[in-house]
Length: 360
Image (tube, rainbow, N blue to C red; front, side, top):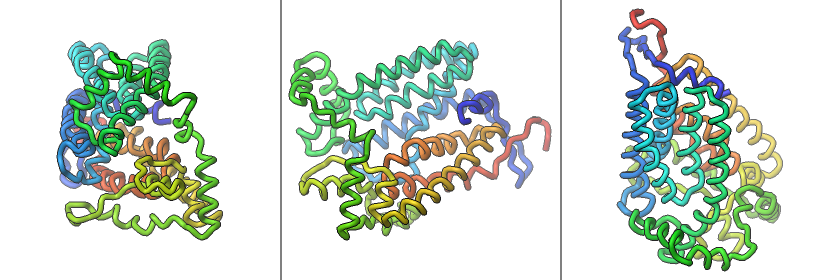
């Protein structure tokens, strides 16, 4: 449903503020460029340096939730490039490869896929060419296959050097990329792994779910929801607020007994609900999660159908919630995503589109 209606958002937006009856006209091309530029600064000069240990800064969650703003911008730019805008086409050819390259340095498959998928979707919506969409889909699938060993290799090298999977600056990541391509490091790494296919743990959660059920039945419950209230207090209000992580690391250490482990083991919200409350938690929590998805989806579709372009980030947050939350834990998959979504919606939902520029 989102894909079917995104083309409306990519045409034009006229935002009307009923409180003062002032019409604000937003040029969607300018919005796309603004999303790219502001999103790039936010992601590559603030979020990533903080995450990679380049700068010592705790980034507020409300900013972390806007990390994919640059991808939204490229989707809009690609839409107008497909419509025949020569300037947008030139900008896309110049800037998108840089963004994709930097996404590769993150050693995160999702970031690379988003950097490729949203421009491909925007181009399809602007051109209507299904052949191009199929070509882009095949290309993305092939790149995903290539990403598997690259991501594992990069993270393993960083882990060996720093004891974490993220603490490496841009120069270090470039060096790792060079070693992966031009030296024997890649072959040695793949040979050392043999037939090990650990990436299945991201797709099949039956093993971790069984262990979580055993822990609950043995009386060892997961109590991370006790900290849920912390997610709703902005860091600007509570400067000493603890840094909140998902319980994947704790779960992995509990299962393996390795207190020095740095791997985050996936479980799914359904396995986590059992680990928290047993079968009653699975039944009640599943219904509540479905209700949350229903509400956020309805709000997102309403924004799309009304061509309320300024709500596009909320639409993407709703998509991300529906796609990625089931594979996480309740605390970081659902609870952690809600504050930014609620804040953004309340902040911008008072703006409504008027089809006529001269209407007041």
